[in-house]
Image (cartoon, rainbow, N blue to C red; front, side, top):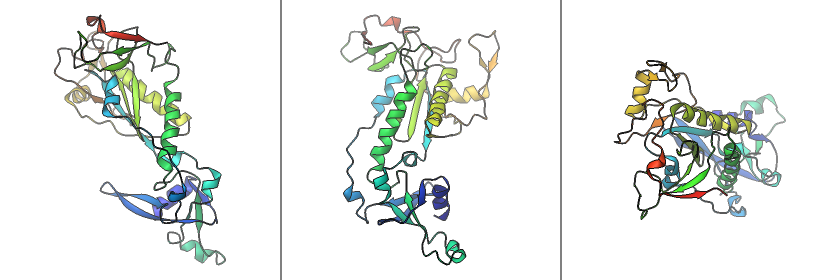
Length: 302
């Protein structure tokens, strides 16, 4: 608990303060070898005096809107999710914590010091308003990251909404009910979805899928949010093949290899390869165009 308290202190999430309200803190297990600090705003009555509206979160159906056969998925974790977002000054005065038990040596060095109090300046775990404040902030960041969907240089570009619903004469259950598509190749647009502090990105081409996740991480850092880098994992036979065998370059001659950088700690790429005749590792690694479904209802972007 001392190490956790020292971390938030050094990062500026808490600052010295001697205000009128004091909140307690305790630790809960986080995995097998770590703890998570919870700063209890209930006992002091702070949570009862706060108001936070309800909000929605994406579901698996939201995620599947940009997933089809051969989609590569990337995992992006936002570090210190709640602590990325500042508290209002009026709330800061009501959120002091007593660090005296964790740093008793400071009292012996300074005899005039009777206690070590600090106040939260960022949203804290255990406060009623923290989830809403953080989700609101990250959704604003999501809009900034996606940018103008009509920009030719935008990796998240899309041109129209494709509706493929049950009851349609050409309905096939393997396709998303609703998705964004590009006119250039008819493929599902690169996209991502955010669930609290976890982002899942997707793309139908390996290189572009990595670029999508890299763009998200870069813009998160630009906005002052933390991208917690994770290691590459091999969850499927498709990715295991990509890390063990050279892959042919779409534009290179026969035998040209493109091997993923094993030292890249940015992405956790996952490949979904259901039983299908199309091989996502074939030349070009792009899925079949949607021209086989000419009667599918398409809603143009206004």
